[in-house]
Image 1 (cartoon, rainbow, N blue to C red):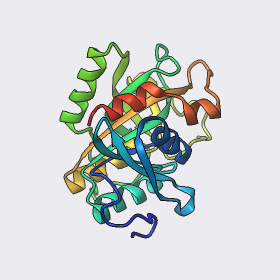
Image 2: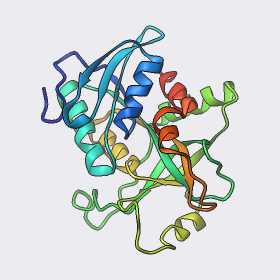
Image 3: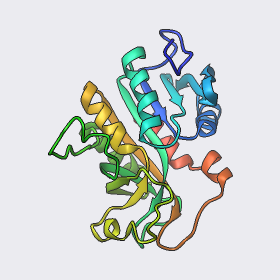
Length: 232
């Protein structure tokens, strides 16, 4: 048992899906996994282990923002021996042609966080996806005619930036969408030598102002969940 996870040794699979919302973790587990068992309720951050098409897999809520995601990611890897982290999260579109519910594969993650500056003073570490996982996800999506975008995303610290034009430069540089965890996840994976991929669903658009409901963010986005699970 770690500080934030009540699981016993062996309770968690080597592959873990990481939705930020714990209720989305519950929805994925109850909708897709065979005989899911809840191993964690500490702080309401639900975690489940079950099987998908015979393969053992866990789903763990990770909260909002890089600091929260790193707490759960670190404990999963350091305390429970997890080898593969797949984020299944939501994002805000930064490009005009990126529609609601469209899937984004995060090839790399820019960030406004200073999380890596202490470790890499006077340098910029470039957090990127594990190539094999990324290629496998892209191949699966193409074969099953699942529309997706792939490229650079932005992991931001501020959900409500004070400057209304804060994201304009990121749009200009071709960044696809903004979320809050991927840069931390990819850095953690690189540090520990494990695999990581962030699969995102567009929940709102900072270009058009469109957005999905809280219930849709919690209980829909099936394409993202199925893509992540089929990487097993």
